[in-house]
Image (cartoon, rainbow, N blue to C red; front, side, top):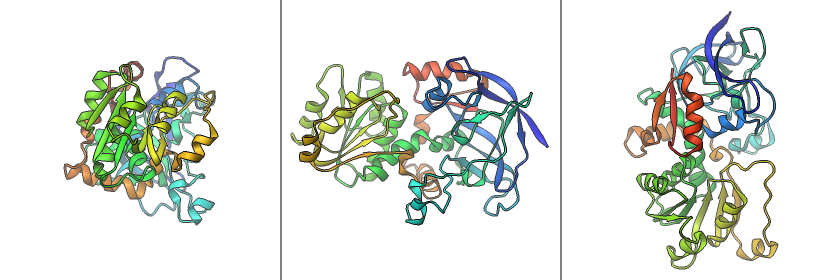
Amino acid sequence: MAHAVNGVVAAGRGARVSVETILVPDPGPGEALVKVQACGVCHTDLHYREGGINDEFPFLLGHEAAGVVEAVGDGVTDLAPGDFVILNWRAVCGSCRSCLRGRPQYCFNTHNAAQPMTLADGTPLSPALGIGAFAEKTLVHSGQCTKVNPKAPPEVAGLLGCGVMAGIGAAINTGGVGRGDSVAVLGCGGVGDAAIAGARLAGARTIIAVDLDHTKLEWARRFGATHTVNAREQDVVEAIRELTDGNGADVVIDAVGRPETFQQAFYARDHAGTTVLVGVPTPDMKLELPLIDVFSRGGAVKSSWYGDCLPSRDFPMLIDLYLQGRLDLGAFVSETIGLGDVEKAFDDMHHGRVLRSVVIL
């Protein structure tokens, strides 16, 4: 039986999104039907709408979500109807070479639902990141459901499904921030502020927030930044060095993802420090660095994909920290909206007016 529900669809490159009736099938083997309660508006959804991911239109947008399992298919033993879950796009396969080496956080063969969701006329939809959660219900692989404490509000819990996890993980998992470290974060949107929050959790002594916008720098202080640098007014590399005894930061995180910000991050790190790229570049961007500088500065240059997270390990832990009052996930929620407000939320996000708009269903 198919469930007819409302969902937000991107019909073509650059076209305004619309709320459409979509058909969601009952779960087959290994699948789960989830009643979505909340879904954050992430920049990745805008990338999908703009054709920046691929051209497999129409897309069912939304992926940063939490909800309740409504039904499961054959063979699913670790989920049951009524479970409160965060949806994730790293449903580890258990059999690829990363999984077999004990590194499931790098799994490159993650699972998605086998059955398609469709428009009312039968046109198959491409769910964003294999999830498609700007919808009243969605169909996912059971491995995409991570059970967490149901005491957490869904509009807060769902943020761990993408942006907040990417930022926290970039600091803790990829960057390896430790007690007493100095950290600089370039770009203070949702992911950058999450990296700042992660650095604070890890015990960083100095946390430097860098952005072009004074308002965003004030937001960054709420999440734990000890210093701020306005990139319109100061030389970013020199400012970070001045704040770190002339040395540069132990870990510098680029949450923007542009060649110029990555170069700043590279040169603003201490000798043998770590540079982490978590901002997503576009396919046409190119980077040029003197190879001798890469060699002579030592250290590490890393990219962080989904914060190198393992959802089964990281989501429950971070929800527990939120419930203990040690991680203010609620501060990321700028507003709650309805399905019909997603297009406006894209505009607000693009112009830096919000950290996160969250769709409530």
